[in-house]
Image (cartoon, rainbow, N blue to C red; front, side, top):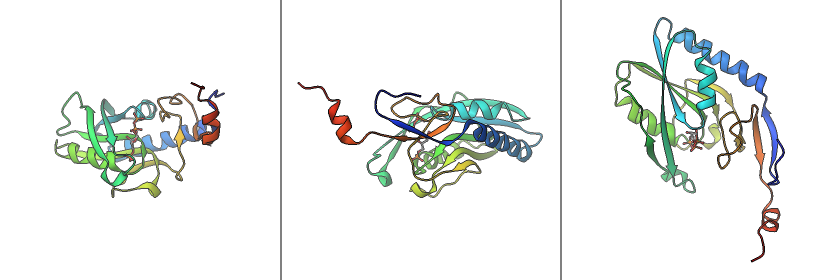
Length: 190
Ligand code: PRP
């Protein structure tokens, strides 16, 4: 995708590889929850594409819901505060829940979500994360299903954004931002 902003995209994971892994994760969930109904909870907005592909490959009765959170204090990750922006529409009590995340990074978001969702007494609570960046972890959390473990690179595509752009890329790409001098050149004179 051409960028007028001097941003460069290098493909990290191609669409065919994503599809293969998403299908494998769906098969695993189908096997683990055999005969049960599975309730997928997507974490907005990044997980929407992953959830859409995942749910269509799960061979069980399913239902879906979404939750949205936001993290503050990104400059100081150990003190990052997570705040709920949109709660679930319905109760998860007694349900087999799979929390669906696009990326597991510091773990602050997942740690918060697991805490509040466990209080709501689901029958079981699992986590599916398409991407895992273990090198960035601040909180000791992990996913039950991981699509890909990736290095500490800024990635976009397949739901992941930079300033709300690039979520629609079919591949997962490393975003290379322009050096500060290029950005400075683009600031108009007063
Ligand atoms: C991303 C991602 C996770 C969270 C992971 O969301 O979707 O929810 O960050 O990061 P953490 O492990 O460091 O907490 P983001 O805040 O970028 O919002 P978005 O999904 O709407 O893009």
